[in-house]
Length: 454
Image (tube, rainbow, N blue to C red; front, side):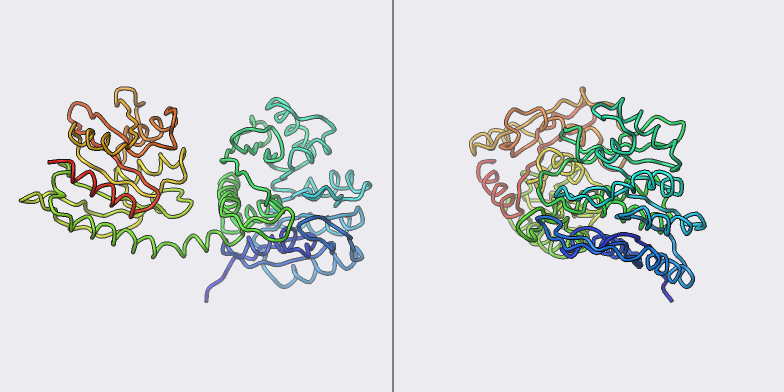
């Protein structure tokens, strides 16, 4: 019989479904846990704000906790909106006794600016809840409130983390998404006696960020429940939240929530991606004379899933198209995910600069092909392997992987680049990678190049 890790959330309810218990249970479920809940408050809330709060008696909160814990084996827990000192006093004895990890999200203010923590509860949070936290996850305004200091620089982060750790939690994650503005969103992970580590994710430009703190802490708890080490649980939860923000949905007319089911929607795209790649490759293989464009290592085609994060999210042929007699090609491979070939590596690197690129195809090197691209007004980026840093040994070409990112990030008009030129090196043939947003676009470009290359 299958057993899922049971993850407990002790938090308030959001009637709009974007934060609180509702967000926690969605995240826990998508990440493979079984969600349990103890309600600390009811809110009349939507995407525009919080209209009212009703808190149950502290004794009833304690009764919920007792009832859950006496029957169900909890693998990990999180706390969110605890609201009042009396509720914290009711919760603290249970947290003192548990053996499972507890993530404490010290919720103080909603995304819309409504207070979710009573004034007399700040000190109670410090004294009664923080000492039982495996991980404390304040955002910058919350960290400022509990430490009594302004946070503007990484040095301030380090001092604030040290002060928070003195209050008892075993680790602290100060979330930078609400401050220290930059291209990246940086969360700072700190443990006693260690310098805070920056855990970075690409910042997502969206107004739909209601409930991000709840979602992150619930995701961390879920990963802890699966047995991940704490810092790895944080990183995996960051990746989950980042995908939920990037795969944007619109709920209501204010600040909407992350798309909690984004990983499920992404997985649903695997079969359509394989089908699209197979169709594009069949169309290429049927082109008369395609072999004129194929290099010694063959020709491959890579197609990325939406929001691809690694080789497992990129489909390519497990064996490349090879040149045969009379400039024909032989198709021996099949589309598959996770094939660590050069085209997939180049595409993943290029997408760090341009997420609109979804497919990549390799051509042989040659001035005739470059002349054809110039005649078709295809913008070209170049890199020199001599400039590439030493990379780790892997199936794909580390220099090409570096070159794809370097050439695009340094190009003055990166959004217009349609091809990457690798000049090669001693013992390395080099080649040309064509990029596009859609497989059909790339197939049409290859057909046009082929007409110009004799």
